[in-house]
Image: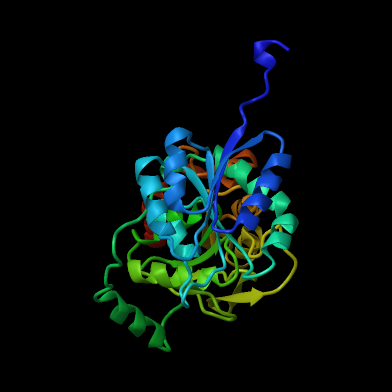
Length: 365
């Protein structure tokens, strides 16, 4: 074999977990995966630091629920000193509070939900998904997974303004809807967009690929940071200016027109593009119900969910935007939408908020 035909270098992986059974299970999964090399395991972040000084991995798998270890501080330190794709896994609840959202906020590439028991069987059953997640994480740019250290800012007068709007029976319906779809890297992308929007922006509906029970807490966190009101969607919620509804994990969300108003239905159904909620499901419903009165935005994420739906929206006369490659953590979903001709424009993340504000105030649509 000539030098030009050599196989690409292996993906270097480190596993940090307090359980020897889990470390061995993940080691077996990685050993069987072509093109991967387990360079080290560690029973705690403290032991991991010594091993990291000797050899640095491409991907770190970190149990963020380890008792007696401040894994979130370790994650923040990693992302600050040597940005690396970190896949966390969590049982979702720690003393009644989810640590998964905190891990994403600290810069984790993704968080895998794990059961509280039967971890050995879980690793065997989820082996293919774990390997796929490692491969995607290894291709991402970890420098874009920046930790957020700022404390939540109070809303001040925004709450009063929005409460008055929702309590007024004669409040006219907005004739515009903004639909956002995102996946890997999307928690930070959505924060970057939503925190820069004024309280009078057009009504927003969002699909972020996220496990069940994460979405409500993610919405609560964004609600503390944003001038717009953000919450997890409920069946038959009305879409209002200054409000963003996030599809609940494990359910699809669709937009429906009821007279002069827009509402959302939260429904069950099979996964679409292996996702529930699915961006395609939301975008297609927006194309049908809002047409040219809508704006669709597809942002960072692996796979192609949302590309066809954004194409539906553009054919229905909606404005459409795809996030550009340079600002995407993973350029899968936007790239596919661009390839299909679904994106009317391609913008960096920092220009998307202004586009949403402009669409909301533009009287031509």
